[in-house]
Picture 1 (spheres, rainbow, N blue to C red):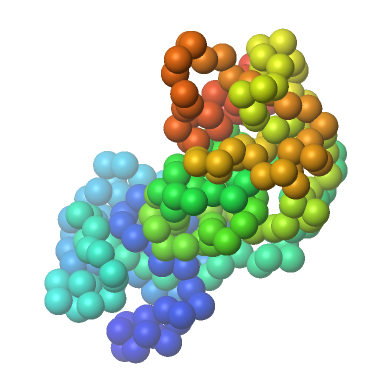
Picture 2 (picture 1 turned 30 degrees about the vertical axis):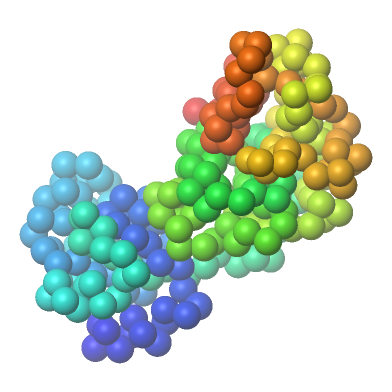
Length: 247
């Protein structure tokens, strides 16, 4: 019955790949209709150690299945041998959350990102800092299974959507660019929209034209760039120092 349910839901659901993705999704209120593990006892022991707050919920959710069954359900087996399917949050609810003002934390925008793993790492960071949400522009699907895996299920802790540049949430738009003003001289407001260009080509002309401010991260001469997730982390940390908000 579990496999039948899984196959029926798999197309429209969000794959939670591994114990930590399931733990975070449950912790932040995801609807999880089916969850499997190769070893229930070992998974619940892991919950006792790392996530006692959701241990009872996981106990109620998890179904033990043979390893061949588990591996048939996932594209790439996770070391914890745990997987689940979750209902994707309502797009309308996410858009309302992104558009609501006044905001108490920024929205992060990834402009034409290319790397699925980088996008997942940014979503994990944004959730950790309590950002209002993460928006991607361009063709990358921020709910791709590889992004969700990289985000460790923390898509459910923040609002994650894909939008066109013209549809970005309201608020002063601060775009990170090497030609901008040193970020250390600026205070980032809680309602800021923080935009980061793609790993290879930087900001698109459309987003750059819409930016209210261009800011640059401090960087030693002859160092060409930071990793995307590192840039987002530095910027959110700078915001948190000035706002009194954040983690």
